[in-house]
Image: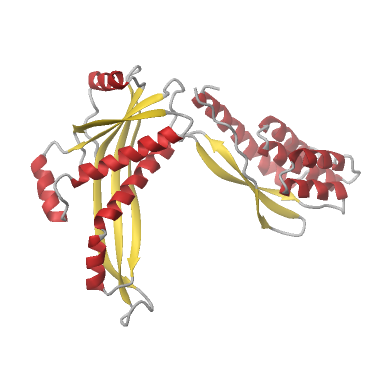
Length: 336
């Protein structure tokens, strides 16, 4: 199985005062939807052919969509989802060329696929699970909007593209649907032209806008079933009671020189000043969190709050406990 390696990106974001600052780094969080670790290979399929073709034809006439446009746009959703899954270290994914009937209407999914069909589709491709896009719809609207300084009348147009998708994640060996999810994804664009010209220009870009929104919708669902890198921000101390070791340790943190930071902050813990020790312990907790040693980080945060009454460390300890629980869940998902 592919491994996910911790990558550390550290940036000093904001100086909040003469004695403290904020530092940010990337952390890997488990996927919002729990996917068992034995699912490593998945098939992605487009199941958005309307069962009632006449209703689809009438809708196309009303909206100006060509026949089969939504099916083509929906294929962009599944193709982008497949690409995102393959670029992760969590799954290998195959994109099925089949397009199945059963598209839902609006916010309603069709009946689930029969398990025999799900099993056959997975067996054909040698995969463990099936992700099906089961409903898809797109809207493109143009309206007048203020456009100060854009033209003599100060009036322009605003175009809004909405893509609505519904997914199911099938786990055939256990005959469990791991996820059912319906969502909308929107894109907005302003046009500084006069309303009539702006509408013409926007309609000309309609297909491009829906294609872009559809691809983005595939990435939106991928983030639901993949571990996600998130930016985490912590507040650390730059100085205290003029202690040079604390100040050096803080500078080493800003330079990503973690071993040097630990050495200087550990020296600051030998200071006789209670405040300096509390701040050094708090900073040490942050350093160990950035290095991925959450248990050590939690221990230092407990020292900072429990022994030295460092107020920031009380809330920070809670965040670290949450991160430890999240890390356990992540390890379960990755089977590490």
